Amino acid sequence: MKQIIATEQAPAAIGPYSQGTSYGDMVYTSGQLPLVPETMQFVEGGIQEQARQSLENLKAVLEASGAGLDTVLKTTCFLSDMENFVAFNEVYTEVFGTENAPARSCVEAARLPKDALVEVEAIAFKK
Image (cartoon, rainbow, N blue to C red; front, side, top):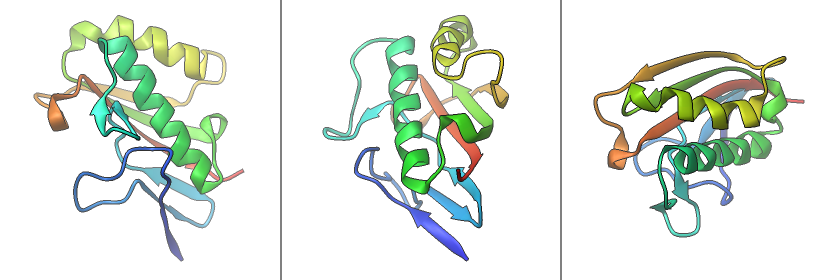
């Protein structure tokens, strides 16, 4: 049975979607923007600060589902400018490492919601 994932530790949905869903042991997150959950404003700073906040939000949704960063099978990362790829990768590597990193797609999007610099979604499994 499909379950809706909801946590106050990540930003509330800004449209008609949930923070994530799960079915059985599989978890699918919505794209996580670099919004601070308490203020619903972007974290201050550039691509690295926004990447870090997006990944913190992703972690919160995953943990609310019973999954975690260590159970992520695949991420899809959206960048507003591929010129930020190297700086984004520095933060991404801090979070996922290199030895056991999940599969990943990373694409440039013409425009992200609220003009974010980055958005990250994931597919994971429950622990």
